[in-house]
Image (cartoon, rainbow, N blue to C red; front, side):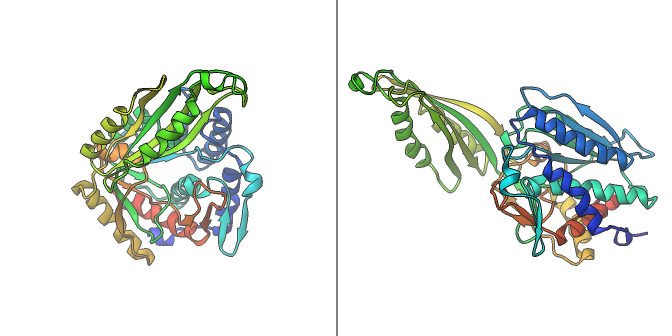
Length: 377
């Protein structure tokens, strides 16, 4: 039997995907992530897999490791690396509820990347139901902190990847159905200004505003952007009372670099901004960093070629390109383990209230993953 003959049921898939989307799981809510793990773990167990819930750390939720029965259980195989966390806070479902409209399915986190994880699981579920055996063992590792740079589970992902022969990352497919082979480095920075407090009404001149200083620093930071290294500030918070000159302000910045050399120059430039001015201290500290996954590595291209052949059998062309958005594929690709990223479903609006997937891509991408699992050896 070919993967083309597997009996996928589109309506059944959509019905079973719905609880995944309606279980909201923002990164910063460990309890919500634990509820999400429960939902997914049940489906994995019902598919015949062995499940292991790995406790969370650093304030993050738990991870889920899923292993499917195989004659070579425990030997190097295929790792599917995905994340269960989303950027959407609890309550987003009320603004972007689960619904099917004109060939699209909406909901928070459906594109990034719950539907991708789901189709990978569905592929293995159908393979096992058909009595087929994949050439290599298949493991799913689903983690809770990708959207904040994977500070808690990077080591877990890297260790699991080193125990396997290939890594598949079902992040959303690109608009033209391409996958990702290579990703730029992503660095995060924590910014802080420490000002001098005073009463904003009767002693304004005695104070030094931490907020005002941060506001002046932001265009300076973003002005350092070039074609090779970008900088942006995406979070800012400061002050306590409107009638007090602010004594503290905090912000978070992100930079993207195409090469390790560009990354290190960018890091040096950011850290070099630290200092004092007009009695206000500006402090820059380096946060989580994703390494460059260099595009065009032979082992990744060879894996892509296998995947492209499967796509051709399904009737679509699988292109490939590097991407500026970071993922956990940065880690596995940088380790030199053959990695293919963005094998997930088609859609648009990720990280927005318009997040949705193209309904027909569920079936297509489930078959695509089944083809990968049955082909790689």
